[in-house]
Amino acid sequence: MDAAPESEERPIIHPKSPRQALMAEMLPPPPYSRRARHPIVVIGNAILTAIVLLIIAGGAGFYFGKQRYETPGPLDRERTVVIPRGGIRDTADLLRREGVIDQAALFVGAATLLRVEIKAGEYLFERNASMRDVLDTLVQGQAIQHQVTIAEGLTSEQIVQKLMESEVLTGALREIPREGTLLPETYKVTRGTTREQVVARMANAQKRILQEVWDRRAPDLPVKSAEELVVLASIVEKETGKADERSRVAGVFVNRLNRRMRLESDPTIVYGLVAGKGTLGRGILQSEKAQATPYNTYVIYGLPPGPIANPGRASLEAAANPSRTRDYYFVADGTGGHVFAETYDQHLKNVARWREVERERRDTAPVSTGAPVPTASEFAPTPTLSPNAPGRTKQGQRPPPRTQ
Image 1: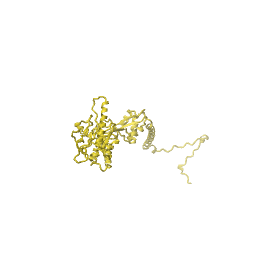
Image 2 (image 1 turned 180 degrees about the vertical axis):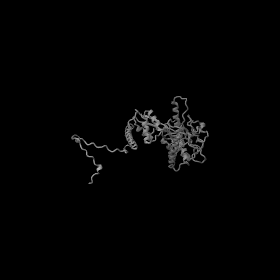
Image 3 (image 1 turned 90 degrees about the vertical axis):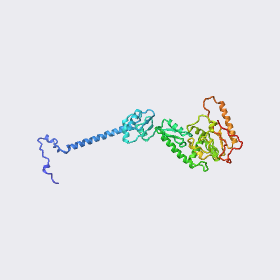
Image 4 (image 1 turned 135 degrees about the vertical axis):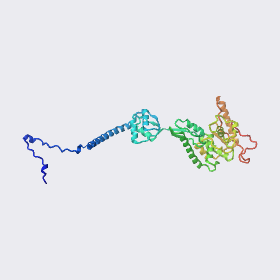
């Protein structure tokens, strides 16, 4: 092995005394590095130190923020809050004012970090809901569902009036939908849903259901189109509210249509008089039964030119597949239903019993200044278009009974 150069050999130190010989050897200081003191290195070290401190502070902030984010909130009971359309900051301020959260800044930070979209609506927040629960509810759009119920047999004008009375719906309606184009049903909506949206849903539902029913109709049905089926179903809807009677009532009308007899349905008189605005609020007068309107089936033959209400699915199905009976007449039985008859003589006996029920009710009813209650339809044979057609009244037969 080569010996080290003389220039690199340590100088020989001769101690001046034994004490000095026992002392540690003092090494010379390390050579000075100019690069270690360069400004770029100093700045780099400072930046690195700052980054490390920021990471530590950020980690600590994330840890405590996450804990706060998942900690049960300040709500002491359930609360409903309507969240309008707006920014995250506005939503956070509203939630803080309502007592749902207690730190708006943390809510804004979490929503911004997660890049979520808050949906407007009416929300129910549970007791002690954490900020995470609140944000999840708003992001998933779990808004409160309200029910808007439209009863079968209402006219389009009545449906519009009911929608206008709803407090959860918004906006106006441009026009009243055509009669018979809306499906009565219970619809779930969120607060702020427009009335136009509800009408559109009802119209789409009616088209879908009508097509399904029309495709399954009886093959010998005396109606030419789905639109005529709606007309027939609307009359069935207005004549009875009992589910087990619909198909039988429809069968009576179909039998009459097949024999070219007038339908003589009282609700068609009412519709022709009030033009779809509702009810008369009284009984039908004898003169009104003879009053000619396009809808009065005591005057016209066949179906009226359009529906007299918006029928429900059950009435559409009854009209499409009516009971196959020989009934041509029906009258109220006093219990909310009807009694049916095949012949005119049977019908007269049923009418007589109904008259007795009416008399008993009038005798026992308290004195009232209100309008009389309308009675149910009473069918009777009527002349047909042809003198030789089946169902023509017999010579000398007394006229059918009329309700007042």
